[in-house]
Picture 1 (cartoon, rainbow, N blue to C red):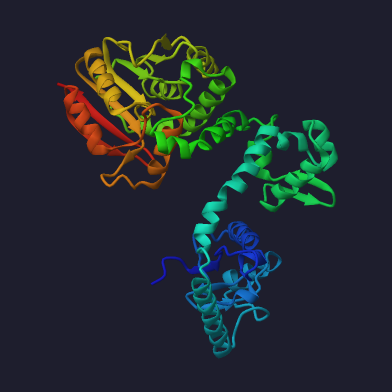
Picture 2: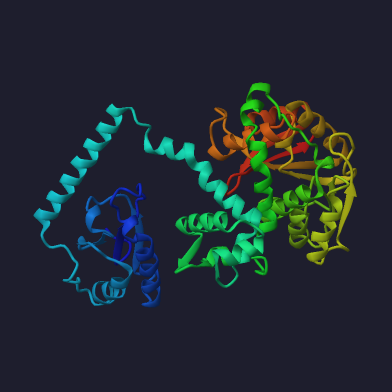
Length: 453
């Protein structure tokens, strides 16, 4: 039984460029136009659109099937979508021009295609070729590096409303040949568009990566640019079991620190209200945001409970940046700051709740237990600690992001990592906490909540 009047399945399976596919025939544009036309026609509540895997008619894509009739369409390029919506979805009449009616012939084509794919896979296996997914994973750094260099060079800002390679090269003070090569690659990755010899930003890059855009995220993305060198030391870090070029946060280049805090702020600005809404603040009058960075979470706490007394604790070289973000939020009279070192100091004395987001993964198990003991001493009677971090399952291979992020800590810290929920619960018990529990959140992080005994 269909929930919607019509249900459309559109093939959008990505394939290698050498293979015929709906994606290679413009399925992405068809999908965007289909969603747009359905919405314009007021059919959002009647039509469900679902992307799917291969339908077996790759040579005639983009392909889609409309149910409940089960009408197959081939060659549905974006310029044909308006007719399809008007005729089939609004008037209930399949479009004769590109609806498939030769069912026997269609079935034969699909079977032939499946046999060809099977034969090719068997040939590749016999030849000893790496599976495509493994090969793509191994070469993934190439496209990543293109993007990182474009951000580092500020190419998207240099393009402006549209520029030639020579114009961009002059603005970024780079070689014309090298500039044109990277611009062409960015266009191939659909991060730019190209008309003649002129390059243009896409709606996404114009919004997120051009300096004069109010949503420009380049300062935050420079943190990822800086991570590149550290990740290149992964082999040696695995051999030694620790970062091979360790630079403590308080000794980092100010540019690196600014980029790191900007990145943390951009990530937290979206997630903080959702996280804070999941935390019970009943009976909480004083709160410490431990290692609070930009103060994004402190700001969210202040907006949830305006009379809450909040302090952000962080390193002396971070606190000036914290104050800047708090001032931008208009809360400099509400949120206080305190400079110190969470590895040594006794932060937040007299707190009802101490919140630690993205802190524990930077520390070793021993350092976390020590921190929790000091936090316990700082809490009022019946006070709570709330930890937000990437929490691994017992097998330590899921969630995938948390398992990969552990390597980010290997190359960047002395002994940090991502830890399992059981480890957190054990540490908190050793530190004198009770009723510790894991609380899931939407997204890659979870909360660990415990009360002072």
